[in-house]
Image (cartoon, rainbow, N blue to C red):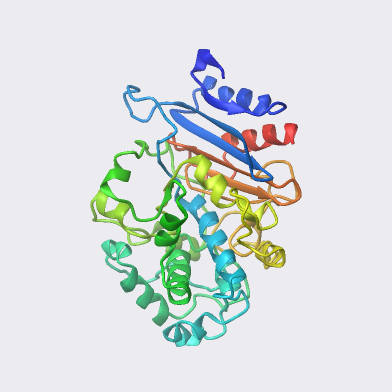
Length: 371
C-alpha cells in the first residue's frame, strides 16, 4: 500500500511493480479514480484502487465503486458465450438462424456465432436513420438486425460492431439458455452489471468526457458504426440507458469482477471458485483466430477470436499469447492462457483511446514483470 497516494488494496509478492505503475498514472495527472485487478491460476494476486468517484474529489474510490466499461464488457459477453458453447447450448460453427430463424433474411442464413463474435457479419450499424432512443429496446433492435441486409459479404472481412454485436449475441443467448446476458451475470454474482437497478446506479463513478474525439478510420462503415446521430443511444435519460441491457457497450463493473468473470478463458476453463465452467477444447475454440487483416471500422489491423482480439498490437501488454478487449476511454481486459492470468483496468477519467490506452498498457506490462 502506497500511503502517500492513498492506494488501497494489495499486490502479491513479486508484483510490487504494478503498484508503482498504477501510482505513476496518478502522478502524471492521468487519473481521477481507477482500479486494477489480476487473477493468476484462480487466485486474486493484484487488487488496487485509488482516487475519487466524483468531479469535486470529495468521495474516495472504494472497492464497491462501479465504472462504465463500455466495450470492455464484450469480454464478459464472449466468456458467457463460451460457457454456453461448452454446455452444448450454443455452437460457434452453427448458423445463428438455426436458433433465430428471422435472422436468415436478406442473405444472412449462413452467418455463424463465431463469425458474429469476430465481427464478420456485416452488421456494424444501421446506414439509415433510426430513432436513437430505440437502442434501449432490445426487441426493436433485434428485429431490425434480423431484417437487415449485410453491409459487406459476411465472412469476407471484419468490421467492428460496437453496438449491434451485443444484441445479436444477447438474442441467441436468450433463445439458447432461457436467460439474457444481464440475467446470467446477475446469477453468477460478480459485481458486473448489464441492466442496473437504482441501488447499483448510485454506486457508479462520475465519468467526464474525453478531452478530444478518438482517431477513427475514414470509412463509410466507421461512420455508420460510430458517427451517425443514431449510432448509439440518444434522447434517453441516463438512468434509463443504465437500466437497459446493451451488452456491447453499457456494462458497469469493478476491475476485480471483470478479471474474475473472464478468468476461465485464461485458466483452462476453471473459474475463480475452482469450478470448471468451460471445457479446455472450447477455450481453444473461443481463442482460435477467426480472421486477420485491416478492420473495416477500427483503425487497426486485427486478429479476431470469438469475441476477443489477439494481442497483435501490444494493446494488452508484452505477451503474444494474450487476448483482450478494450473499452472507449481507457478500460481494458486481458486474458493469457499461457500464463493463466486475467486482468482488468477501469477508470473514470476518459482518454480518446479506442484501444491501447497507455495507462492500461503500462499496468499490463508491469504485471508481466512479476508473472
